[in-house]
Length: 399
Image (cartoon, rainbow, N blue to C red):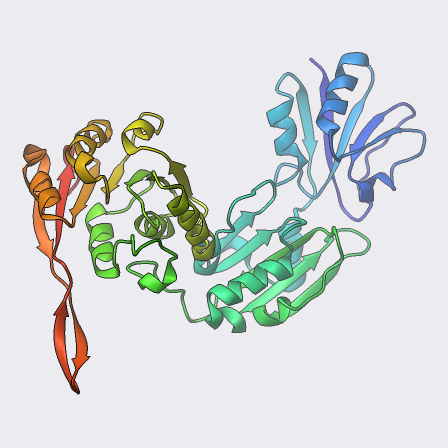
């Protein structure tokens, strides 16, 4: 079994003893401190294929060394090595991670900090989770640097503009920089291109809004295909959101699944919608809402259900004439202790919901919402269409 030695390096220091012929993999900044008598390979592009080729063409006595910043096993090169080269033996020698250096230089108590990484994550930035953290430390990537993340946070939740924040650039290296100030000030910092930068945000006194029953205006939607705020809030309450897997069937704009995802970071929501245009709405609303734990699924509900992992929670908000068939198929896949909530708008659908799976039904009710509306100088109650809501459970779930 070939051995690969992995070292954390800080500011060009802690470089291990290297000898002629050693094969050294490192980023461009660290390679400049490696002696010229070593064989240098930059960690970029197809470095994995290069390493695999060298493992096959060199002998067991040829030493392979990998250098990384800080702790290679914390959002560093170490994780990629362990995943890609399972046939190898590794030794790791860490240095303080970038977030530890930032905390030390800024006087931040990171014992209660939540750590986020955008490396190798092409999806949405989890803004709501970041905003809820007492202290959030975010490892950024070249496409979304610390200033850009700060800008997006202020756009999403303007009250956080006054929160204290710190940006660390190339920490532990000779050209390191630290910027301190309000989050709004950090959003205007111009950072060096391709720099290694992280952002720390300390939450102020105003907590972010709980994502429950947000106004319809928060969501892009097609032909008003959305579960309205009052209904959405009741549905989420009845679902008793918890970590696990949730299906949002007939997702429309995705508002229910997105708010469920915002309420629980350990929940994976599969939003199934047959209309491709509405899938675009879901993706847009996910990005705007700052959730990264919703997976849009385009296709027929009955066909796509067989491809999904078994759910702990199910919301059926669509289905039309297939409502009863969808309810039966979905409930069959529901895990023991799981909850399914079904809503119906039309009289015909309400009749199906009221009579289907009755032995598993825990609640059946209608929700009527009236809003004050002005007419001829006076206010009157204007009622919306009553919504039928049924709650089902499989086994004991505390309902």
